[in-house]
Length: 255
Image (cartoon, rainbow, N blue to C red; front, side, top):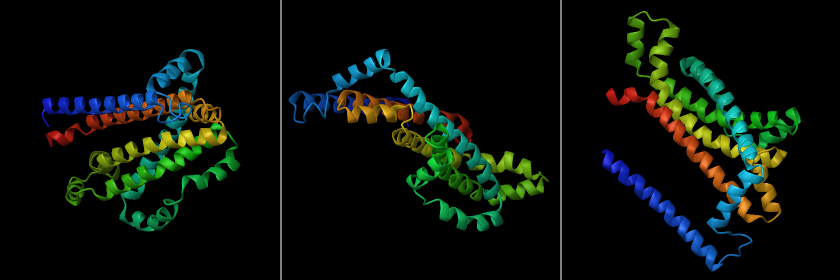
């Protein structure tokens, strides 16, 4: 896609988003839905600004980012390490596959009571739940990436007498990197969702708690401000990991 086409698509996407905001404002002004439940974007923006200036919304944002980041990083380290060990050995994949298929479908909601029993209503509970929920997309993507390494590349490694570590770092890991980054991108969204869920369940300081209290007190502008902020966090997180992916996989274009 040419640079001009990319700019055109970017402008079109922003224009579509702006049209949605305008339609939202028109519906709110016409009061087709009670203002108690649907404030206009002007009121939601005012609540967002007021939340940052006078009501500690910035602290809630930091809390959610902390839970999301710690849980996601813990899962990333574990998933890449375990996935590399399992994916680089065909025998290990055969032995571990039944256990993975048993654990992978477990809903994260079923793990929350276990986490509460182990860690109580604490940040440790939230990080454990987030790490468990985000582990599987990255782990399975890493295993798939290592399993899909071109066999001829492994033959070249053997012909060059490369050690196991050199084979992994110079051949297997770069080949598996697209799958690993794809799993990390998916898991980052899951981490944000689970952060909000844990904050609601455990009453932890974060955007989930802000949204829950706003809903219970029928402060719809504050509720929508929290939802908008969550959307912005998700968008920025996706943009950051996309940029990291673009830089790390720049070799694919030249290849």
